[in-house]
Every structure is written in structure tokens, then in C-alpha cells.
Length: 319
Image (cartoon, rainbow, N blue to C red; front, side, top):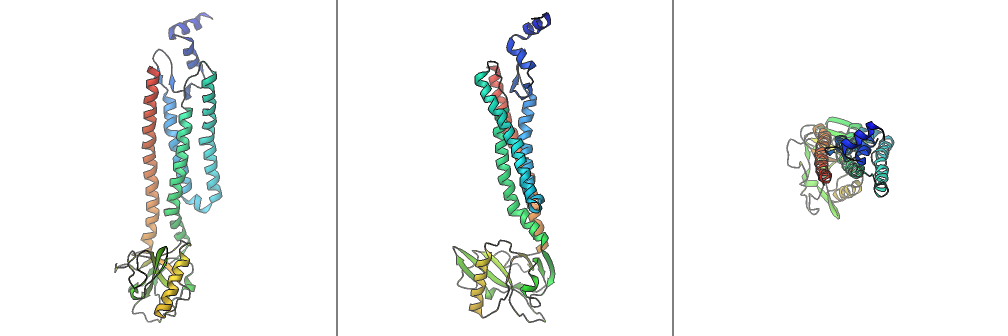
């Protein structure tokens, strides 16, 4: 041992200290050893920001337009994020666990903590991002891609002419024809009611515009009371985009045809709202608000568990 090395060895207090200071992996360790043991700031920052950034990335990719317009690229990015953000830390953590039982100079690291929190961030980000997309952002993008009609008279058009309609703001005087409502039960009650423009110079050839809702009528009498039914300012409609429910609403319309002796050749189904454009924009606002709330909330969550872990590691250092 040369004199300079001996001085470092003696001043620091032991062979293990030299290993901790010289190791190329020291930034990944839980703590750095020296005359005063201290937590590794680089490791703490990595444990705080890496899982949160992974969560943010997964949530954003699954929530927004790339998922809608380019789903293949979306899921490729998700797979790459899993590989780099979960699989790679997992490999490092596995090596670290093996080293604990084989290396007498073993120094604890953040690797195991990192892989657990990154997996959690990926899992939560995927679930919450997919929910935000399917519940809010996908309907918004669907409505954007469908046609919008304004000042429409239900007596002037039939459903076949407006098969591409996504949003309709009807002419003033249009309301729900509640006396011709009907319901069809299939576990749930599927309720329908014609949308009709009153005082129109045209004669309706077919009742093809229907407002719909679930579990808001009895099915035995004309008592439709779904969202917006009693709002006199409601003249807008958003197209029903849930294909699973459409066959049951069609059966309810067929029952209405038979009961009230009316015709519905090409029925279109809508949600009755005050203004179709405003209602559509509310989907996007809610989706973006959820995004901001989730990323802020997850940062607080990640900061909390990282602080708890750092405090726990500091006790190990003192011991």
C-alpha cells in the first residue's frame, strides 16, 4: 500500500469506505459511507422522479389522440416504456439481490425500491389512462369525427339522411314527445322517446330521432324521465356511440311503433342535452382535468413513499 492510499485508508476508517467511494455504482446506493454516513441524494431523486415520469408518460400516451388515431404506435410506446422503465430496473434489482448473498462488500441500493415503484407506476398509469380515454377522450374524438347539424327540423329529415350525425342542435320548439315514450327491459330498462319539432310546416314521414336513457322509465306507461327531459332549454342531442346498447333501444322503438301506431324506418339514438357543442367540449375538459389531477396526485404519492423509504434507510445508516 503506498503512502497516499494508507492516509486515505486511515483517515476514513476502513476498507469498506474505500469501496463505497471508489465504486462506479455509488450513485445507485441507498447511502454513501464516510466519516459521516449520509443518504445518497442522487438515488433519492431517481427514486422520486423515475416512477412519476413513467406514470405521466403512460397516462398521457393512453389518454390522448395518439391512442385514437395511431393505436399501434401507442401500444408500441407503452411496450417500450415497460421495457425501459420496468424490465431494466428489474434486471438491475435481481443482480443486486444476488450480490447481497455473494459479496461481502455489499452496499444496499435503490434498485429494488425502484423496480417496485416503477411497476406500480406503470400499472396504475395504464389503468387510469385507459379509463380516462374510454370514458372521456374517445367519445370526444368520436364526436369530432362525426358531422354536426344546426337548426334541424325533425319533420324535414329522416334518419337515413343523417347517418353521419354526431351532434345536432335542433330548431327552437323541438322537445321530447313524452306521451309516446317506451321502455324495453333486458336486465336493465332501455328507455326511448321521440324528438319532435312542433309547429313545423313539414309533415314527419317517419319518427327517426329518439332520445334514450337507461333505467329512467317504467316500461309500462309513458313516463320517460331521463336526463334533460324537464329542461325547456334543451334542444341539443349527442349521438349514442355505445354499440352494445343500440339493439335494445331498437327493440324499445319497435314496441313504441306497435303500441302507438307510428313509424320509425331508420331510428337514430341520441342523448338529450341543452347544447350539443358544449356537452361535447365537456368530455375534453374533464379528460384534461383528470390528467392534471392524476399527475399531481401521483407526484404527491411518490414523494410520500420515497420520503418514508429514505427515512427508513437513514435509520439503517445510523444502526
